[in-house]
Length: 109
Length: 506
Image (cartoon, rainbow over all chains, first blue to last red; front, side, top):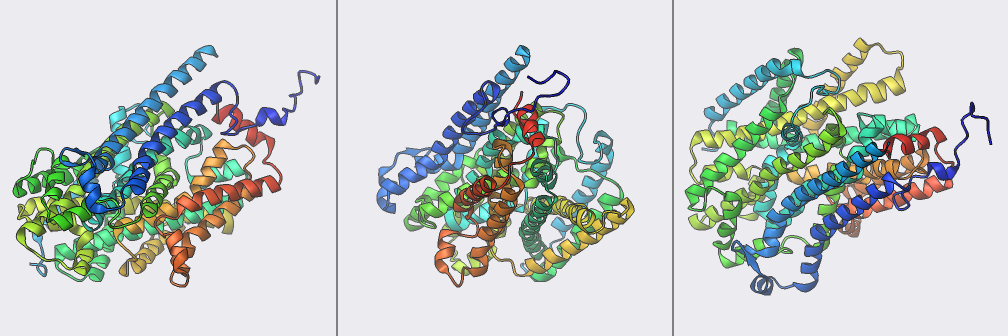
């Protein structure tokens, strides 16, 4: 062991930053919150268009078969109006969790 | 009517520009110099208004409605790309880059990758992004001034450039800062109030035109209605998803968007400001498609035939045309036109100043003349600003597409270059300068290859559409950075330690 006056050279493991292998503690919890938010972001944004692309190839049938909200096709309302609200909610959700995480770690310090 | 000078918008524009300089003079003492960091704490809603004000350009104010007018559902790719990108930015990078403590993209790249070469590359990319972004704004200014003055587009473009530079010089000479909240309020009111009146004129629910435009679409003749409501009439699912994804990663990598995270007192305020910012931006994007829908509604109900070429030519000022067509009061039509010009001018001035700063500091001072005095650098910056303004003017004479499409190319470049460099710079300690430089080079090639060689290789343009290349480009660049970094020595330990101790700690 090195004398306390000389800072010990940290090992490579100590300096590892990897999104897919987060460091234990704060970073691991932060990355978990990020994964949840990103999953909710990606599924809602791209899920509906992918579903529509696979299941609805004919314009007339599509508009006859899909459910309607506020008088327009649900997917149209979903993309044009709901998703922006969803993004706002996701940012809100992320901030609440990060606030909680940050304050709990700062208290522990 | 097209050929006459419209005095009302002209008069109102003069008043608004003078007023904004006066308000800037009155409020400037509240701002600190340099990056305009506000030292006192302000409410999250006000931070959000500043984020939205910074964001609202001609692409948002004029462009989105134009794309919806032409391409219906396909326009949602722009709207979702430009809002969903804020989620990516907030979640993946906002806090971490702020903790890193560097205010501009070149500053961050140099500090993180310990390389002045990488810094110069990122500065050049940031300047090109500004240039492309400005071309789109110039197109907006040219078209609105052409409508206002009844003159040719090119003449209007020159006139608009002169007005913009004069405004910049006067505001700069008087050291007037921009009151972001006032600016946002002005823009959103000048967008939404005329829209409500248009809905009223056409007999739709005018209190919430953001919803009632659905009825207008349903009332269209069956063929047109189906075209607008069906998702894949004007583009394939791949094109829609690629565009949406590109705009999202582009938003997260755009230097002037990222810099907003530093203009507030602390990290938490910046994060919560994004929630409000997204809401304020949402108000504009919920409304923009309504202009396109009401324009189609008026065309159908009045029996006016518009051939595709004419529709394409006027799409970028369809917000103004719709107001004119339905017979809105001249003042309200003028308000819309002025909103478009203000959105464009404020974006141009911000981007030109940033671009000129990057040329004078990141390229001239860091690369050519490190002994240059501050006075000398200021002169270089002023000269660079003039050159950039003229360069944009020359390119904008023959705009390569619609306002939103040109802007999307700037986002594609940001998404293919700066986004991967920021992302890996924060989330992977092993990313090094060789990887970053290689990544930025590959990203630049991926962005411009389909534009330069697309006519020779149509399949290249189909796989990598110029507006949407980051769906493939960003992962390829990320892979490039990983491979090159793995094959070359790791970054110095002090940088990696900084990442552990400062960037990824509460």
